[in-house]
Picture 1 (cartoon, helix red, strand yellow):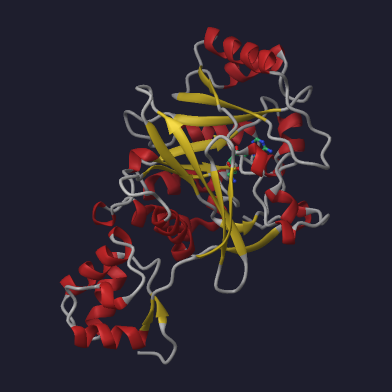
Picture 2 (picture 1 turned 45 degrees about the horizontal axis):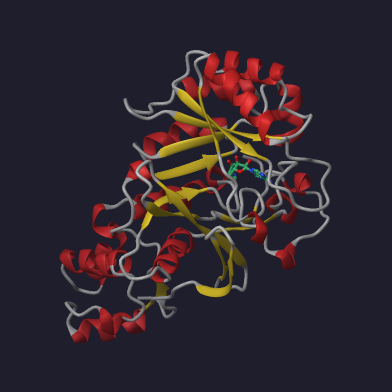
Amino acid sequence: MSARPVGLLGMDEEELVSLCGEMGEPPYRGRQIFSWLYAHGVSKFSQMTNIPKGFRAKLGEAARLEALELDRESKSTDGTEKYLWRLRDGARVESVRIPMRNVSGVMRWSLCVSTQVGCAMGCAFCLTAKMGFVRQLTAGEIVGQFLAARDLLAPGERLHNVVFMGMGEPLDNFDATVKAVKILTHPQANGVSPRRLTVSTVGVASRLKRFVSAVPGVGLAVSLHAADDETRGKLVPVNRKWNLRALLDECRELPMGERRRITFEYVMLRGVNDTKTDAKKLSRLLEGLKCKVNLIPWNPFPGTPFERPDDGRVEEFRRILLAAGVVATTRTPKGSDILAACGQLADAGRLSGRNALKQLNPL
Ligand code: SAH
């Protein structure tokens, strides 16, 4: 056992079983700890009541249990809550808890988590991009957002959906993202079912297949945002590496499973990608793909040339897609008064005028 206590949060069942093995304990002990960590979200070893006291004490010396620390909480008038978490090294990331009504009008919470501190993708219309890339989150820090947000729920409430749509590009932090998804959807973790977890990616084409195979059944959202390479290249720099053709060819081949459609996200920017011609081009582009389109009216933040189109324009765009046989919905912005809506997340203290593009990670 090393002198430095090892952090338990983010360890999967196998790792916990092997840690217990090294400490002379049977495998089921590791499974018990897994359940204490994730299903119960305990913050102290003393709460692990089915673990013998002697082993709890040994664990307390060898390992750490630490929850994310809430730095700031903001509440929107629409019920959305934004949490700024402080991590061990002082870095900060945000998660957003969003109230959603299902078709029967029942209120459910969705949690949007971050996968990186900042982001290297440099998308022109996204506030997180302005921070540049700071560092990867560990699997423990991703799962930790879920656990800490779950702790803040009122009795009887639960987090029904989890979306990886906060700060960062999940596929640029591949291993930690996959591990976090596996932990959160593990039957003994009391997290969420794979059907209710969606990971959103800018479209790192080379990693899509590996990702879908690693976490089958999980929802996939791909940020398309334009129907031609010229426009997409300006909005989403990664398009210069994998253009629309490369990305969509890859999407067509994904082993998505019978009942799963890929969601294509399309941020609506006035005069940039919101014309009837764009809608028609988009529907042609998606022909034959089992997918749906989620239109996201751009959420504003200061200092950009972009504007949100009016609702009529968004609806017209949607109708053109529908008429062409493409399932399309519009995402209602949530929490924009507290900068908690899509693409409005950033650690204000870290925002700078630096050009995030210069820091594009070699993927
Ligand atoms: N890196 C992931 C997750 C990003 S956030 C990705 O690129 O998919 C989730 C979605 O919000 C993405 O489609 C992203 O492009 C979009 N988005 C970013 N900034 C936005 C803004 N200001 N308004 C609306 N949507 C935005």
